[in-house]
Image (tube, rainbow, N blue to C red; front, side, top):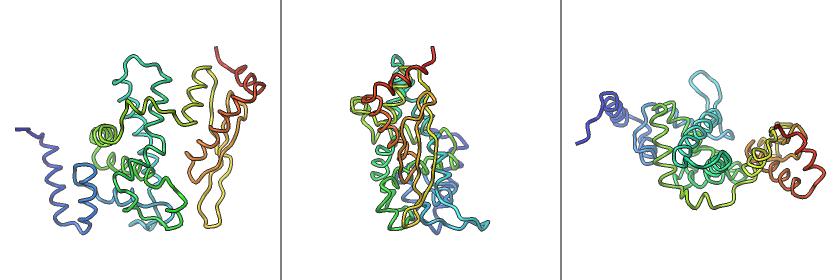
Length: 264
């Protein structure tokens, strides 16, 4: 028989009581199906499922969406996945760990996981944004991680990422074999040759429907390499990275200029 500590037991009791009297029982059940526990503070999870295209007004009268939770979840994912890989692969070098982490937290992987969780069907978003932004599910995964962290703390968040995301939805052996995305390729190249890399947001504009488009430049050794645009900052990073990586392969003069900035 598994004995629960008093804090865990208390949290479970509070969760059940809140569930029994909750108006949003469907959301409680949905979150429980994904995480294995009932929320203590349902408002975090409600906000995690609000896309910027359809913000909600909070109790203090401000409009809010899931972007702040997405930012928080992104940072926690990086930390947990990084520590997980560090412990799992004790003999692998930094470049391998960096590229493998990038494959796990890249938008395509998170988007696939979000669809497996059926997050998109619960995200509050405009029809136009849903059809134009293919990363709504992936963004919601990050926001969900942020919500879990605020609701349950780091340990519960770590357990969710390791057991519900990595163990159930990722095949690390196959993932290691796959070609990494362009941003991680570029990062690994700069680490190999000791060249600095920097992404700079250079412009933000709106499409005809008012959806923001981000334009990012990538600098290698302080030298402008390329720029890219997308409906998210990470998408613009990928576009810029792809152009920069291909330029390194084709433009020998540019490559030598970048390599001349390498630190010893």
